[in-house]
Length: 396
Ligand SMILES: Nc1nc2c(ncn2[C@@H]2O[C@H](COP(=O)(O)OP(=O)(O)OP(=O)(O)O)[C@@H](O)[C@H]2O)c(=O)[nH]1
Image (cartoon, rainbow, N blue to C red):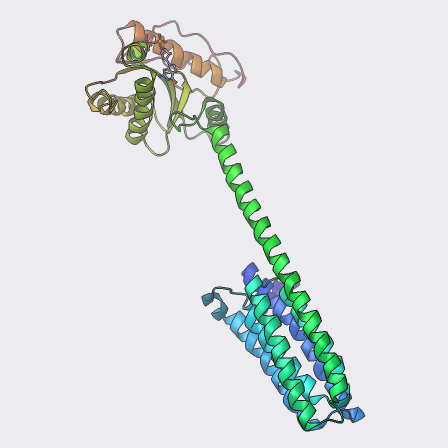
């Protein structure tokens, strides 16, 4: 309960979106340093290093700056910009405040230079090379201007000899940090592009492992996984019965022999496209090997599955199968059977194969159905071998 209150409070303060949350956390981390500076100013006023009015202005600017960035990030306004982290604007604002602090902290102004470095280090992790150059250039120029002004207004606390050392230090260190930021940025870009390439390679490997290269259909190995999943679901729920149809293109050797393998390949690809269009989205068509396909017809009886197969048959019969040989048509034979959950998958596939053989033997371009064997008794184990059906497959 307490955890959920804490996490809702954290979501409310820092956003539930992980990216926004990270941006807000980073900004608040920087704000912590700044707010600590307000404490130091109070100390400086107390010790007489700083006058109270300057400290009030400076602390006010610091608090306003922190609140402004929190409001922009928490409201999501930042997401309208090309860099939603708003790194460069936040850094420029912070640098401006620090340079202001340099100008008003009199005898202890040298200590504020450390903060310049700290702010630029924050940018190292997020700035693009151009942003890093802008931040560095701005720091050197703005520091130069502030130092010039202060040397003229308060030469006691800002003597030329000391200021020239400060300026040279700034001019040497700041560009070094900027160049480090640029190097890190290109390293990040390289890592990102390697990550993208790896992601693409992984997708390709997954496609190669599960798809048939020629037709783009599910390949035999992946189809076995799909079948096992369906079988487990059926065992667990008792629902989603399915049928299998083994399909073989008729006289396909003739297509190859007469028109060449290229045309044969085109016929296989077209068959895959047309058959998939004719099937339901929940059905799965796999290339089983050569010119053989295995069709998984979900949530259906053999009668209904056969209606689906006939739809495929009609569409294939009317479709040109090759652009090179427009008059070429294809027919197929199919062996259809229902899966019985008390049998191994192989037994069901073998039955579909037998039915296919019967369809070929009966003259091709037809579907033969072989029914699943009736269960011998209710105590038959799930992996028991099926009983052989004595009747021949029925030809449709
Ligand atoms: N073009 C092409 N042909 C293939 C591919 N895989 C298998 N084949 C061919 O498919 C043909 C299969 O021929 P058969 O098994 O004799 O059968 P069929 O000519 O279709 O005769 P029936 O099945 O009895 O109707 C062979 O010529 C194989 O070379 C393939 O990926 N591309």
